[in-house]
Length: 487
Image (tube, rainbow, N blue to C red):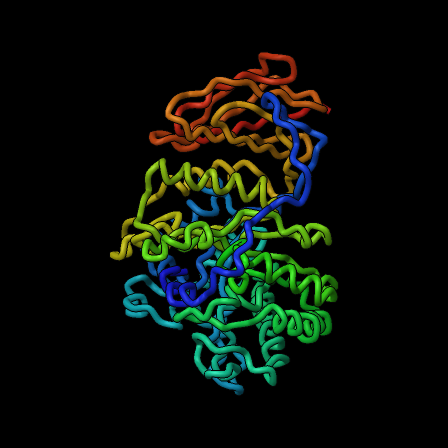
């Protein structure tokens, strides 16, 4: 998403309605030395992922595409368990179309002229190829598909960008999404979740469609949910996905939190349809709007109403569009962001925007060269891996109390296994110790270090203090510790 296109829109908004932001669902816990509280359970982890969506063609056309897929989903890579794709608006171009063209050959030689330029056909085949490989080779656990726009003929302006879904096409669009699910399921690629709208508050110049929360609530409870139930569609329904996670009052139309809250409060029947609440984590960094200050920043906050109703909360898209920075400083910046969404927003899943795209900014984890031959592995890719590789699907975040200066610590458990992620953004190494409270632990601990020179570099430790272990966290690093409880 290119946030520069929001400039004119944001300048038109009033500052007069701004109210200072708060982000507390519950009382905070006291901070102590690093203590892992085994029995103080937090949110379930549904997984980590990345999107290809509208950039599927770029990865599909790359000569190193299998290697890059391995970097994203393989055991030696990020081990991602979620792939986010797109319900393209060009599958059906008129009311007579019924095919999703999943019979087209996706194994064309890479010197085929089809790969020489971007096209709808290339995107469609590319998504099919990526999704098939992710599912069949890497057993990717969850396939999420978001909709940027309904087919143009269903919309008010009859275009893929802007406009809104015509009310007389609400049911046709619900049927379209159900048919998409059935088509992908028929080839062994069953969608885990479908979102009817990506960034519903933003009329982007690319594929987009504007929805108010009220319009979406009506569509979900009167059309999409009942249609999925009637047609036996097992997909979860994702809603939210606005550009900002949470925002000041002046930006509620772009706030995922406000969108989610309105739908749950005023259309509670949505809870019958196995929903997932979601949001994006963008900020607006245009220096010409510096006078607006924090008003243009997304606020990392829990979706309290969704939590109250036990609705999972997913971060479904995040990146930044500032100039490309593949350094460890950028990796640490994003590691702190991952930490905050997991500990403050309590997200159940975290999905990066571009898995591998040819971007000159920070939208991508792996930056593809435009010659289709080379690529760059960024340090944000590597610090993301300190979370994605070692926090397994089905883990539960558990509480951590600590007073270790400069460190950020999170902990997770899954059965007997536990994972602790420690971030040290300081310019010096930090010595501390970790104790596990509430269960005995095995004597052997494994560690994995990422810094400017290392990527998941393995170290071994011993439990050298009662039910715990001493740690030395290198300067400007992220270290993941794994171990086993005895019970």
